[in-house]
Structures are given as C-alpha cells and as structure tokens.
Image (cartoon, rainbow, N blue to C red):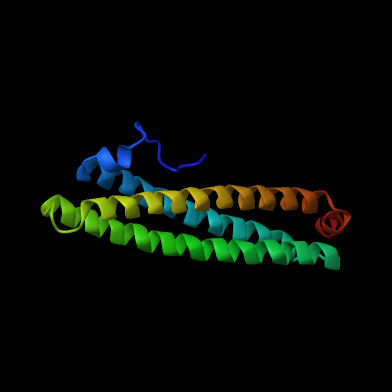
Length: 149
C-alpha cells in the first residue's frame, strides 16, 4: 500500500474540493484514534506475558519490541496533532478559499497522507511482531510452568 487514502484519481488531492479533503482527513483522525487504542492493547498484551519471563534472551526481545512500540506510539500522537491542525486549516479554507496557498496546502495534505501510510505500515509490522512473540511466549516452557502453578 503506497498511499493510505484510496484516491479515485491520480491527482485526487489536487482536484478534490475542500469538503472532500475535510471528510477524508476526519477519517484519518478517527483511524489514528483507533491505532492509539490498539497500541494500548498491545502494550497490555506484552505486559501480561513479560512478568513470566526468566530467560534473558526472551526478556531482551520483549524489551526491544516494547521500546519500538513506544516510538510508534509517539509517532501516532504526533500524527494526531498534525491531523487536528490540518483539519483546522481545512475548516479555514472552507470558510475562506484564499486563506492559504492552495497548491502548498495540497502538497502538505499529500505529505500527511504519505506519513500516515508509513505509520500504518509500521503499525502492522509491530502488531504482527507482538502477536508472534506472544504466541511464542505462550508456547514457551517458562510461561507454561508459571501458568500451571
């Protein structure tokens, strides 16, 4: 997936009206809030299994994954702030089409969409890693022995 949004035309960002871009951006914000909540769940999942670990190798894997999730979470918060500001600018453009330079604004919109796409790709990779390591830990002898006690 090269672009987060589904563009009906190759030049959609440069041809769409402000209301269409506003609606698309609201969807982005909604999705980002979902990803934020999902990241909280992934942290919770890791925390539930981390307490049973005793092997340094497994602890290091989980700590590295937890650290990368924190970085991803910080990126998500930054994107939420950028999207909110972008919505404010779009609102201003709907009220006054000459408030900002249209071409520059649309380029910024496209960059935001590309950054969102990158975030979603990273999120999916991290989510898959959390599930893989959780599955591995559930099958590991050290966790099974703790759970059977």
